[in-house]
Length: 304
Figure 1 (cartoon, rainbow, N blue to C red):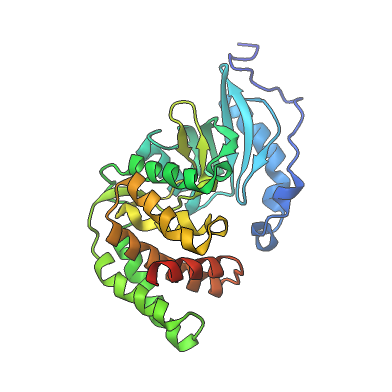
Figure 2: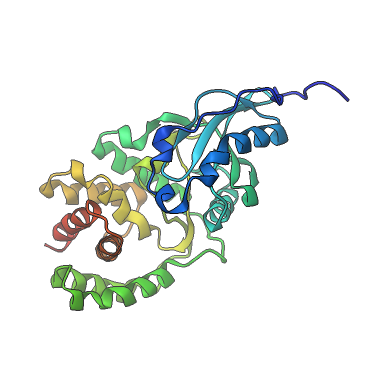
C-alpha cells in the first residue's frame, strides 16, 4: 500500500522541530547533559511517523518536558516528550487511572521512549493567570473532582508523612527552621500518619499544573497519583501563590480552598503545617532560596 494514512502522516522530508533555547537552559540539563536534547528533533519526527501525527505549531515546554502541537485524523493533540524514567511511568499510570476525570486525557503512551500523546488543552490559559482568590476556588474544586476511590497500589499519604517526619526530627539540631514550626509539624504528623480517607490524591497540584479544557472547565496535567487524604497537597496550592497574598489574607485563601474542596478544616490545617515545614527542610537541603521563605509565611499564618 502506498500513500499516507488518514491524519496527515509526515514524510521523511518534513522539517525537524527546533528545541527552544529556554528549554535547553532549564536546570535539569545542567547535570544530565545535552545528549537527550540534541536527539529530540529526530525523536519527535520518528514518533510522529509511528503514531501518524502531523506537526501543528511551535513546541512549548515546562522544566522537564517538551510539548509539541500535533494533529491525528483531524483531531488536535499534543505530543509530550521527556527523558524516560520512573516519572514517566508514574504519570502514565495516573492518567490511565483518572481516565480524563479532572485530568488531561491520555491517548497513547510509550513509557520506554518518554512519549505521551495527550488531549490538547489551552496552554495559554492556566490557573496561574487567574486572580489568586479565583485560583484557590478552582484548585479546591479540582482536588475534590480527583477524589475518587483510590488505586490500592498507589503510594500512601500516611507513609509519606512517616518518612518525612523522620527527616524533620533531625532539623532542630541544624537550627535552620524555627523550633516552634518544627514542633507544630511533628505534632501534626501523629494524626496524619493514619489516613482519614482512602481516596485518590494528586501529589503535585498547583496553579501551573491546571489548564483550561473543553470537556471540563479545568484539567490537571502531570498528576502524581497517591491515596489517602486529599488535603495532602494543599500546602503546595498555597505556597505557589503566597507571594500574591498579604499576611492577613493567607487564612482567607486557605478557607477558600477548604470550602471548595469540602475538606475538614482542622485536618487541612495540620496538613499545611506539616507539608510546609517538610518542604522548607527539603528546599534548604537542595539549595532553594525562594520557597523556604514562602513556607515560613504559611507556617506563621497557620500557627499564629
